[in-house]
Image (cartoon, rainbow, N blue to C red; front, top):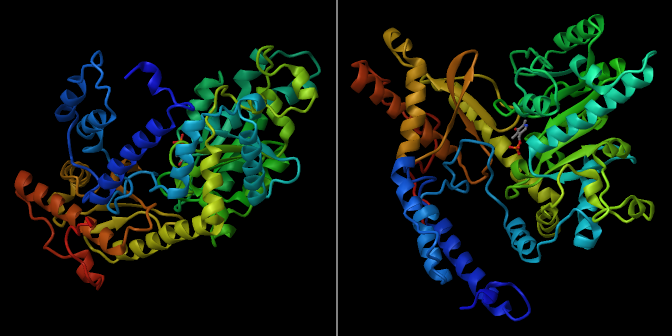
Length: 517
Ligand SMILES: *Cc1c(COP(=O)(O)O)cnc(C)c1O
């Protein structure tokens, strides 16, 4: 086959159709057959399969490449659609969005300028407006799709930084330059906020002391009394609080900071309020919308559709209350988006983005809303939040485990408790071991985290197909791995065999339910 036959164009439509169909068939088969979320393969076991591929020797034939792909990727991938994948904020994806994804890469619009996207730009703008309206940001709101929450947070803080600098310069009696202001800038955020806030501060040229960590209460929400104290301290020390970052759904606990109180404090202090709703944005379409009350007062909001809107990676957005704030990322290039285009009101989205060439991720959300609707998405998210509440009850009634907080969203942070006093000194080790052993078995994938210096396990539920019985099964597996670790390596008793499923009176509980066919 000539190289040109691989180009997608008017003469290769049939080749395109056949290739894609063959790929879709493979993935469909794989997804239907996955009887566990992971094979448990180790990096050293899998590495040769990848390194042995001779990149100088193409296979030419798509079928042969798909056969090879089976070995280097599909066979051992981690499958988020499996109900026992309970680890990170990865969702099973909705089919309308996957359909959108196929269209995105075939048409390959780039959303930087109107002359590279046309309708794509209008669709993105419509969805930004739709999201801003759901938040309640008001008529002057605007925003932009981004690659993820990390980028959305970075851009929000960039805008906040430049607004703060502008205000300081304006209010200063003597002329000040930006490099003189930067060292005085501070960001206040809770100790449970996402690490991308710190990363953004570094990228924005702020010092390592720029991010001040505000303590949380027992429910892992920002303590507003502590926030007040920090705001006052910064004022006394002539520091400029450029932003308060509230989290609406912390990554570990799903806890939502007290948004109305934080909004009041930001208003009094004249400080930019950013809400990181990367995780909690699904509430915008759920029957629990009230949990986000106060978000409408934010200056900027991060949403990750690729978390609680069941969209494929990547799909995220930054929304701002005042469209004028986006001018801080507006630069003009003669070849791309000269200022005269803005004067002619030609909608060039690059004027609002920190990226240039940019994917048309908005199309996935568009297809989702047009096929299943916002309520459909909200229903799915509500289901996992309901499930987390049930699982919390299951865990709190189970003497084998200790659970940290009652979830507001869909995460559960807990740990296995060794039964004997001697075993208790091994609690951290046992829990670390249980996660690793479970991962190596591939039977389930769970996460681990550290709370108050101790190791815990974490479930992040984002799959409505995960039943309470799946959760009970995974708890039993964790208890088994833990018990075996204590008895085999340390000669200590594990817990007597009790089953979470049995004690919860769950019907139809079978260990390791296979989902094949
Ligand atoms: C996931 C997450 C982020 C980062 O988002 P990415 O899309 O992974 O870049 C930021 N903040 C919170 C609260 C998150 O949960």
